[in-house]
Length: 91
Image 1: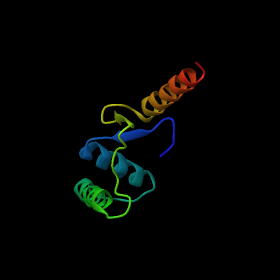
Image 2: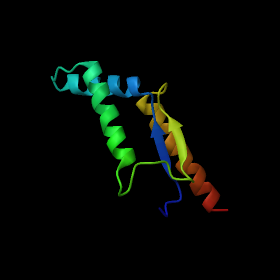
Image 3: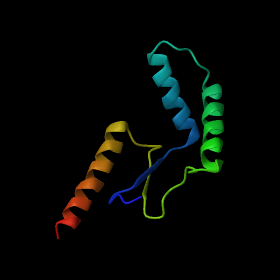
Image 4: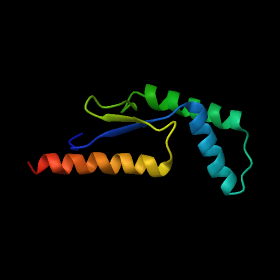
């Protein structure tokens, strides 16, 4: 809670399911995209509605929608935010 930089990453559920399916396929696990999407939806429901520490964006977090950006672009975005925070802290 005391971090100087908080990032909350989101993406469209279909994109998240496709990414997860590709990850599983790369380890030779055949999975149906719809099944992966249903699993993600169920996990999201559990994570956001649990009583203790439900998953939610902190008020001061920066949200990054990763739906249309690559993993390299995601990393770059977070690195740039971190650099910006470090520069800001040194002022």
